[in-house]
Image (cartoon, rainbow, N blue to C red; front, side, top):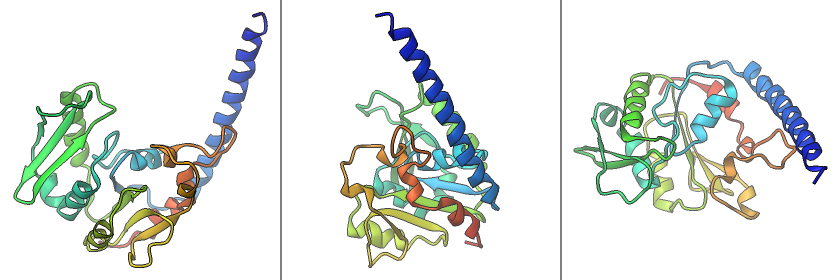
Length: 221
């Protein structure tokens, strides 16, 4: 029993050291970054993690939430139209967190706000950040994980924006926008992409994808 406080101190020191080392790694990425104002549209928390690691403002509404794959593709295909569509509360959801819905002539898109305490808070942030979208600096990142279909890949390729990537499980030769990841061949769990490779690693699994170079590529859409 007497050793427990000592173990907690050691754990605190280790955690503090790793935090500092990871901050150094993030600072290296920040120094490489040229494009300081991207709008990163992502289907889950990938965009938020990238913004955080690079120390950038959230110039995107897709923060702390997720989409179903097919609805995300619909959303980015008609991004301008959905950006003008009012967000309503989904009153039929069985989720234990707020769910919003966008409805217009192109169909329904549901937004799963799993990190928000209330729909009102989620809607306020959604509308605030939607106004920050820069249509001339759009970067679309879709975490394909294991659930994408060939139809998803085809539709994603057809999205009009130039700067787009779908992270896939290995090579998808028929999809020009795919970026192959290989860790899915190992044991998979939800959210693995955003975790560190080990307790003492400075790299997330996401770092297989060089998102700094992707954002620096820029160009008009």
